[in-house]
Length: 92
Image (cartoon, rainbow, N blue to C red; front, side, top):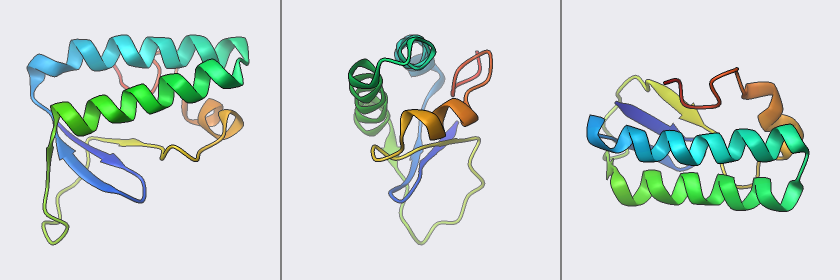
């Protein structure tokens, strides 16, 4: 799966890491649902850090369609709420 972090780049994530990312995504969803700005910022940071550490960064010159686009760390709770589905940012 190819995940893009807006303003940063793309990462290739193997299937084995999706469970961990879904757990972090659930925490993000819970914080957004509760309107807890501090928990939201921490959850978004943790999710993006996990994508960076578990994924393999693709070269900027390689143009590949993204399976999933994640907001950057400066995205507000209100903006992310508009992106969230019932399954969070990461389906599954």
